[in-house]
Amino acid sequence: MRVAASLLIALRYLFGVGLGKGARIRSAVLIVALSLVPLVVVLQVADGMIAGITARFIEAGTYHAQAVMSPRLSANEIEVLRREALDVSGVRTVSVERQGLGLLQTPTGRSGVTVRAVSPELYREDLGFAKYVEVREGAFDLDEANSIVIGVDLASRFDLSVGDNVRIVTVRPSPAGGFLPRPASFVVKGVVATGYQELDRLWVFIPFERGLALLSEGVAHQILGVKVDEPFEIPNPLYSPNAVLHGIAGVLGVETESSSSTALSKIANRLGTDVRVFSWYQLEQSRYVSFQTTKNLLIFIMFLIVCVAAVNVSSALVLMVLEKEHEIAILKSTGASPRGIVLIFLFAGFVSGVFGAMLGMAVGILAAININTVLRLIELAVNGVVYLSSLFAAPFVGRRFSSVELLTAEFYLEEIPIALQPAELILAAVLTVLLSTLASYFPARRAGAIRPIEVIRRY
Image 1 (tube, one colour):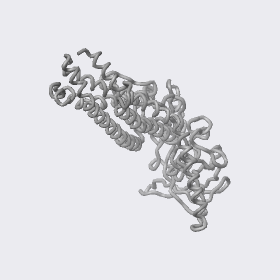
Image 2 (cartoon, helix red, strand yellow):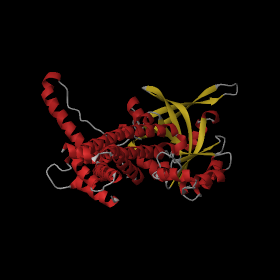
Image 3 (cartoon, helix red, strand yellow):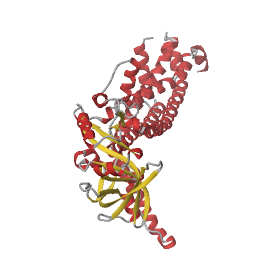
């Protein structure tokens, strides 16, 4: 029996005309497709959320890379190094920053803060920083030595607004050992929000020149914040858009160094051994690994659903074998080989997987692309139910209606950025087809073992 004949018979069993003919297997195909939809949505939405959160953090916080310098360098020496780094091809901006810990004192209380001494031109020159750091009040103005910009959570907590006076207390090493307090007065020029509550309650920004004097060598570190053209091309095995391709290339021993990673290497070479360069992934690796672990767990759960759907294909084929026993017996009695009969049902499982994967991928991609619209519709529906419930419950509990928001700045994203990853989608489709084919092996084997003489005797 030829392979083409086995394929044609499998297609007739699946899509043949007649009452109830192939209905069970077509239902199994639909189940495979429906099981694949949440897997595709989780893959793309998780990637989008991780990329969105990562982009916000590296633009507003860690930069794309940091060149850590000695805190003993003068302003002129730092400027020379900054220009050296800025001359490297692929580098967009290079910002100087000095960081340290301090105590914010206000008329209504005090709180520990992270003091970021940055260039007054940072908000105007670094478009990525300006995109993710929203000015809620005043301006990001550090032109005067006593200027300070604070996070929105600090402003709310201590009832601060533009024009208020605050003090920052830092420490400096004393000649006798230990530390001495160093207070400094500032005027609030702006209130900003980064989208991270934990950072909005920690960060304060002061002019870089003032930071050189206020943040002592032993309690501060000094960096050059580097922004490159393609930050996600910097080696990061988890979130790079080409991570799968980089991984395959690494197994094959092929070099796939990007222009952005080359830029970091050149910066390290230019600035010398006294300056250490770290990528955004190296700076916050534990954070990004936790993101990926959560994503992998969700994918595993969704993949189990696909496995269950593949079992449905196997069950449908078992019933099909029982229904087609008489036809199988006739085929065998006319010269069809057991191998040809096995191929019929293997092809049936394969074709079921292909059609299920195609339908599931189409619906899943459509849902993923429109996930923000879907979430808004869910918000409207939930808020409608909550509002109606509050109207009926108000006379008894006296509670007011409060709207539900699925995505807010408190969760780091107000909208999920979607960027389809072809490699992941292809892998999901291939695994779905493979599972459906494997699930059809046992029914196919049973069909191949049917003995025509026994079937004919029963009929």
